[in-house]
Length: 122
Image (tube, rainbow, N blue to C red):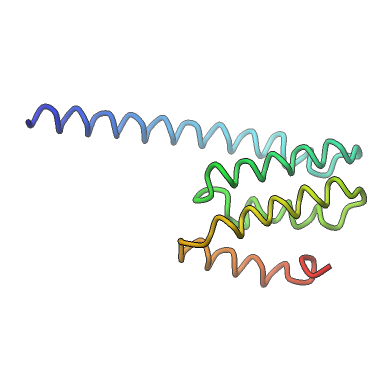
């Protein structure tokens, strides 16, 4: 039985290491691509990157329901182009929907909402 428990612990450790590596790649992608393209001159590109943020939020709310990421969606609400604003509203809606059962995420999102309340109210 000990060897089975050890095998499971090793597998968990490997998965956690892989997740950390994936998070590192996603941080690089976010910083190198998203953080620049969210303000692209082409409204279709702005909409596409913010739409992808909504997908990231849906897939990993524990990671992406954070001001570090959500602020970009809030900023896009001020941009011209209905498609970008709609994508931003959907991404933020996804964040609010993904916080129902998690007190820590609710608190983080509450802080975000307070900070960006004027922009969200528009």
